[in-house]
Every structure is written in structure tokens, then in C-alpha cells.
Length: 105
Length: 390
Ligand code: SF4
Ligand code: SF4
Image (cartoon, rainbow over all chains, first blue to last red; front, side, top):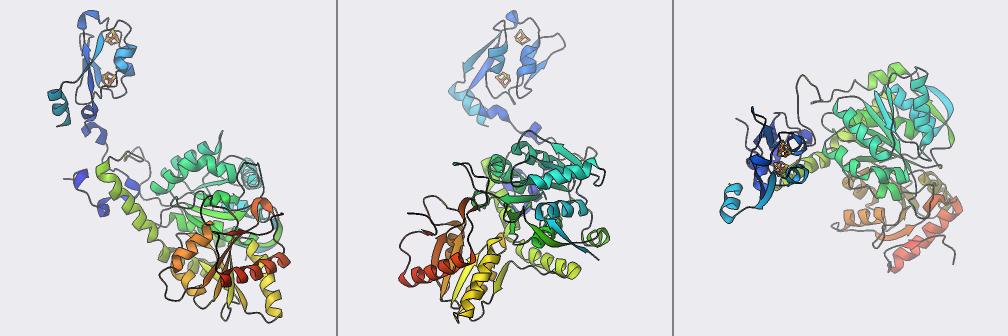
């Protein structure tokens, strides 16, 4: 088992900070950066996939039925999906106090 | 055996890169470095050198291309100067932090404004703390030799830092000198193929240049800095190794007539040779004057410098750059190296030779004499500029 990053000493660092185990970004929870979140209105969605292409964190996936789903573990609340969705299916809503605490966990 | 040829120094650097069998050259032409990469791209075009010569749209891209190439394990060379090095600045740090063994020829040049294509050390001083090994040439032979050495040093697994070979723009790059060009077999025996430990390879993917959150950034920087500070014994050993192969010995700090000298003139780069002439002239008059030359600028050779100046009463330090708002770079470094010594020489900091202005031997005599006076009286200003009208 590799030492978790926050416990590594300077002596544990690989030359040039090369990370030899790929996929580190998968474990990293960008979702805890959020101060707002996209709320999805399925009624307005026309399944065009534009939000899926624009999301910088690949947090949006297209479901079997063509509608989309936001993965909150990665969604950092940038609002790009809401800006790009041309039918206005996404609305950005500030996180409540308890949601902010939840996101930090 | 090598062959002694009359050659423009820029072309000797290109010969060294060719003999080193560089795989990738990415550079953008800029005076006074242009002849180096121009010659290299000609060698590639003529099929004399089996390398990729990457034409880029700027120096920022040139060094960025070098990052990728060095990360893939290719022997990588670039050359730049003045404004070009400034445009690279962001990437200069990245190369050393990622521990990529890139070799750069740096034709030292003044910085704008006003526009000057001529030589001084302003450009390298702006990148002095970026974690590159920085070495200075005094002659064409130095430039050829230290370019070869730079590949050996950068790629050594105990080093793995980029190396910048500094040669004064025009005063060195554009002069024709007799230079021993070593033959291919000797260079091959000296320089093993590059064996970068963790190259980019699709069969074994790794992440390079990732981001680092606050909980790990300090650990990464410490590991880099401990490694960089720790390169000194290896670099020393590699200069010895160069001497074993080619019979020419380079040192971190060189001295000339310094043993019994009461005053030492301290210089860096090609003006050192002119300063030596002034030392001879003063010696002929019975004056106890000698010279110290810093060859390795980063990592700074504290031990060698202290040993070299130990017995001198006065140190006259020439800087060919201004560090705006403070004292000049070499003098600052030397002062801090000596601060904790029990016995310290009195220091005079003099700035001259900016933007390609010559310093003639008789002017070096004046600089040394003026410096002695300043040192004895105690320097009031951070530095004094020599040879400025008015
Ligand atoms: S951009 Fe809007 S309409 Fe298109 S798939 Fe995304 S949410 Fe639906
Ligand atoms: S807010 Fe940003 S990160 Fe979150 S789903 Fe939309 S585009 Fe992706």
C-alpha cells in the first residue's frame, strides 16, 4: 500500500515528483472545492450532450436514456454547464451550510 | 586525437552538441546565440547529425518542447540569449523542478530597454535561482569542453538537473579562436548514452508535472533543493573525470597569482582573461594583486570561494549586471558566503561592462586601484559603476 500523500516525508518524494501510479486524479475529490452546484431540470433537457462536452472535470455523464447526470464527487461548481446549456436546464444554486460541510468531508 | 582548429566559438558549441549525439534540438534564433542553432539545423539538414531540429514560434515553446523531449529520455539541447531567456522564464523553473537533464547554451546578453543585443550578465542573473546548474566559460575551448561536460553532468543520475553553459555574447560567441575539437571515438568513450530513469513511455505510464496541494508542495521543494545542494561533490567528480578523459581540468573557482595577493579581482566569464593581463601589469610593478574567477555559479561553490579568498585583504568584485534596488549579484553572493568567516576581506563592488561595453586591460588596472581605495575606505553605496560618463 502506497503512503498517502499527506503522510509522505520529503525523502519519500520521487525524483522530479514523478507519480508512478497513474489515475491519481480519479481519487482526488474536486467536489470539495464547490460553493455552488448545478441543479438539473430534466424537463428542459433535449439530450444534446453539450454540457457533457464542456464540463472541465468530466463530472457529467450521459445515461442510457440520453439524459445527463452530475457526479458530485468531482463537480467543482464552476457553472460552465449552466452557461453552455442552451435550454437552461441547469441552474446554479449556492450550497447550504450543511452541504458545504458535507462537501469538505 | 582531437584536432586543433581555428573556429568561431558558436560553431565549436554546435560541434560539441553534434559530437554528443544530441537527439533533439529545440530553439528559437536570437542574437548573439543564433549561429549555434543555425549551424546545428544545417548539420541536421545535411544528415551529419541524426537529431530532430524542432522549429518553434518562441523561446517559451522552445524550452517547453525540450521538457517533453527530455522527459521522453532524449538527449536535449537548446540555446538562447537575453530576451529569449526572459521569455522562457516560466519554463526554466519547470525544467529544473521536473529534474529534466536539458543542456542550454546561454549567450549572455543585456536586457531591454533600451534594446541591446550586446553582452552582459543581466539575463543569467534573472534566472540565477531557478535550480539550473550554471557554469561560465572564459574561452572557446571552455565553451566546447563545458558543453560536452554539461550533458554528462545533467544526465548523471546523481544530478538530473538542467545545465546552463554561459558564454558572453559576442565577446565569446563571435570570436574565432584555436579550439581542440575532440574526435567522435573519444567523446563516445566519455559520454555514455542518456539513460533517463523514468522516461515517458506508453508501456509504463507515469504522471509528470502534476499539481501539488499545500500538504505536499513543501516536501517536494525540499527534496528538490536537498538534491540540488547535494550535486556539488558529483559535479566536482565529473570535472575530474573530464580531465581524465581530455587532459583539461576545470574547477568551480579558479585563481591566478592569488597565493600571496593582498588584493584579488574577482570576475566571471570571458572578461576574466583581460583582467589577468591587468594583474600581470600590476605584478610587474611589484603590487601584490591576484585574481579569482568563479566558474560554477550555481550551485554556488561556497567552500572553494572561501578557500580562494582566505588570505586576501581586499576583494574587488566585478559585476556585469545590476540588481536593481540592491547590491550587485556576484558581490551579494560573495558577501553572504564570507559573512560568518572570522577573517573577512574588505569588499569593493564595482559594476562595469554593461551592454557590451569593453573593459580594456588598462581599465581593469583602474578598476583594481579604485577598488583598493573603496575597500580601504569602506564602501558606502551598494556598488559603484565604473566608466560611466558624467
Ligand atoms: S446541455 Fe442542456 S440540453 Fe444539452 S444535454 Fe446538457 S442539460 Fe441537456
Ligand atoms: S458545474 Fe462545472 S464541474 Fe459541475 S457539472 Fe457543471 S461544468 Fe461540470
